[in-house]
Image (cartoon, rainbow, N blue to C red; front, side, top):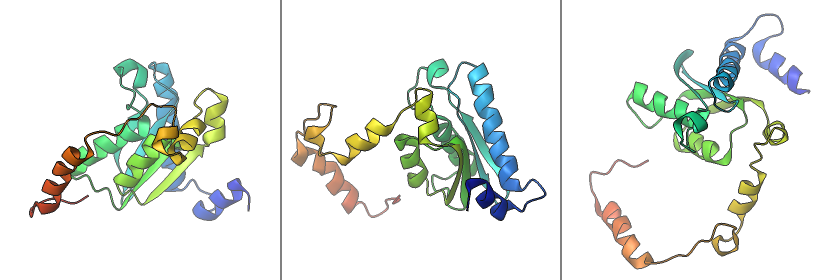
Length: 171
């Protein structure tokens, strides 16, 4: 089944389904982001058929390398819902997420993701994350980022305190 046919099977062939409406909103945010000096990425988070939050890439305007569309939308959704647990939510993103954003989506426990462009589309316009995926698979001492483990026993003190904390909120 082609990508287009898979979408038709999800939505029905005649009418624009809610998923298409939310994806078009993410794409519109991506275009607006470009106009505002950001990268071409937009995201929409939906719960129970209603938009909870949106985000667009703000890396350059905010001087924040973590201000990706998906992370911005997750932060806004968590604030709007009053919880870090976004179970029951869906994310619509104009492009397949980078490793950081994909990790954030998993940590937020978002249950379903829809995306427009893929990794290869992003790479063709200069947003190539493939090296990060390759680096993550390597042992830390073999990565390009010089990494030196130190004071592990002292660092574990915080972990021991966390394990012993009876009223912790696990996530």
